[in-house]
Image 1 (tube, rainbow, N blue to C red):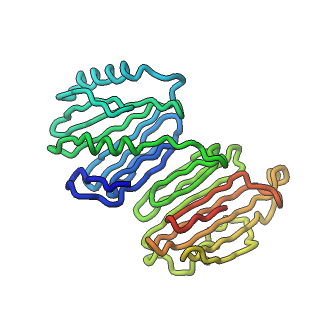
Image 2 (cartoon, rainbow, N blue to C red):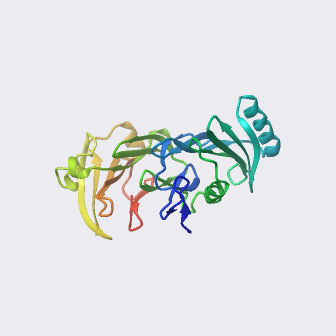
Image 3 (cartoon, rainbow, N blue to C red):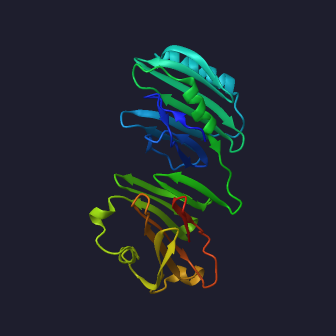
Length: 306
């Protein structure tokens, strides 16, 4: 990919980062972080910002049929003007249609399009710093990078956020996501309480990790489970610790669906020195697939499968 221009400094930014969320992929400047996000695949938004302010919003909404986008954007433009947005004028960057306006000293540019691939209306909003004029070429590069990603041939969907890339079955429910300084965690669950997978990334490892990764990983085993195996392997310069534990005593649901099994892998990436962990629990009969095949990557050199 060609290096892009930083909207604040005009200097070349060599490492824009891809984000993939709810099947939508976009490439953004390296100092923009995801500050708000939605777990609902039907309607929601993600908000990105730099260290000073919100900079970009990506909204989606599933609709039953293709809308009259030109009329919808025109009505929206009239509403923005009625609500007090100044210097309102049309914008376009095919296949996007949009509106530019000024809110006090700040340019706000909104673009909309309909994606037939996933039957969604998408809106991209650029929030420019005060007294900085909007740059259509910069906006166009971001819009051109936006893609609707299909479900993979194995039935899984790719996600990329908070320094992690993970794959999870498309049918799994996005149950939770917690992001705090030096820690991010996303949880997906099978329906009917049949299993759950967790992806996490932890920073400042030298400040809190006082035991080997293998010992830390054993501490993640849920209560009522007993460890069966613990292994350690080297993969592309990473020392990956993995374990399997099974529920010590069965309950009624285990008799129907198989005893619960907990699996986890953890490692410290030598590139960023953060600790990564992927885990899952499922009802398993020996020799039977889990129904929750997942994977986590910390960098291009490693992907750990469960």
